[in-house]
Image (cartoon, rainbow, N blue to C red):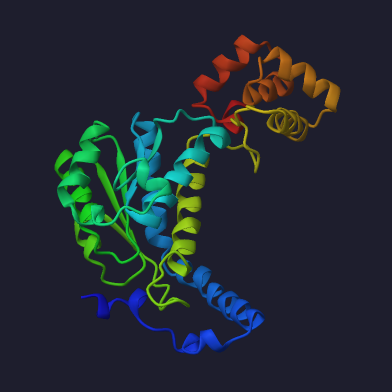
Length: 294
């Protein structure tokens, strides 16, 4: 029942929020937001399990698939889309699915989250396989659409993760790993786009970033598989080569051009004084990890 969910309870710190000044409202929201990282800290062990699942899927040729409704679905899509330029992966490697389809990204579509069969159908539409990892996201922890998706994922044999913002969440019963971030009562009662949404965004950042590090997409703290799709990213790519190889800008430009814009390849070419072809071969042998290549 909704009244039993911590995300639906009234926040005693904001009972007279309509009487507060703008600054008082902002201070109160800021104080409440500070509670989110602490709530996430309590779930790091479960988040680690989710990351390991994603790494196993990637290494097996599988995908990381986020699925949710409303804010939860939009946050999954946001994280999935950003993985492409940041880590140089294909749009098919990390996927975000939202109840109601693409129209629901920008328009609230009521009722679609109540259909578990649609959650199953949407995973079937992307040809869900046993090698994939499915992360079902629902702040309440009870969304039928997400439950249906997780049930189907289990049937297929895919890895399953449930992410909610309530303890003892219903969706946790349908997943191998449950991440339950208890963010508590919202400043605005029931508006889970606030603390719950912030918590979900932070955890999704953790899952995708740590998983990409786990498959060699990072060297030190540099995004060495970045896709240079605009001027800013081209310049960032050269700076990454400079930092990783400890060379000047002109040398970085030279290797960037020789590597046809492949940052990771350019770094290895510089550090091991080899050709593009040799660098690519060495990286393939090392599973894409620069440090192992060296």
